Image (cartoon, rainbow, N blue to C red; front, side, top):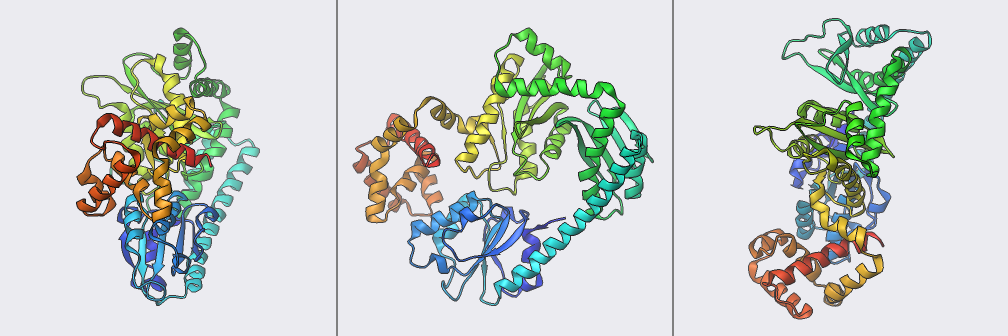
Length: 501
């Protein structure tokens, strides 16, 4: 098991510094992979994500307010779990603009009193992280070795499932995605309140079914190890015992690859591929999802949870990204499927502060699935290039960005940005102002001055002054919807230009 941010803040050594959470209260369950201590201003590019960063702010001395906001934004974009900021030596308190920015991007900032030796905290927490990781790996290696040896000796699927149950001291059940029990050991009919754990079983990267096991009284590290390693061995045994398994799953993989690449085909061929993959072709609504398996610890488990929620689906790895098609009944009582898929994904990924998954719009005509899936996959890549901080987004959220990226040359896009709003960046640099950021927030709020002032944490009079400056510099009417739409496109295009640098 790993540690989460909340647990580290409760560590006895950290408690000495009276930690006070200033922002990101909803992200305290973020997994922490490592603890770093660094005072470099440009530390973000050196981080891999899920770190907890301790600093006393030395690297932030001598930089202006905009630079400190950028520091926070870049940490959030890198996927840092939290920033612990010691006050009393370099800063009397965490700069207000840093907290404001952290609130906007969902980054936890924790204020610490000057009572810590950072190296001592890092050594203690990282040692615990290593111990947990070693224990998990030891369990995983033992389970994997035992199951692999049994597989090599010719053990049957039944014998392997029995071995899984014995390792846990509980029951275990292997079922396919139609819900049919293939093998069971012990009593796979637990009481309603009896805890259990599930893990998807993939064969050659494509989902086949689930392994479910009882977990009452079983150490968490052992459960994690078994559910991590056992499905792989069971998948290999399935290929050996059930000759038709690989063929059936190849049909799913062919379908997913066809959808992701948006290959031209006629409707009858598409419906035939859907039926071969056991996906209904009528009276259903559909949604596509693309998940980055690098940023999500168990992407297959996430999509498996969604499949259970909506009714049916197929998923598998396509060019390193986990792609899935979900299907649910299409009737008057049913919610829009994409809404359910997106909500379920958010329930599981809400602690993440960088883009992990993209969900398509709801599709009711199977002929639209190839475009929906290819858009979903492309939006995930584009959103990550743009450093989107939301864990899960819909394709519609980045529709304009996707259109500009697909149909505008980099040079023409850069020229458009320069013509429309380039003067603001020059003014900000010369006057140390925040006109570009103010305009970005203003168009993001749909031209609402009240909401813009709230998000910028300024009084309305200050916002009105900034908007007046912007209007004069750009020679535009900020109350004209058409001109505001043009500025919205320019701001969106500027993000593409920045991402291409």
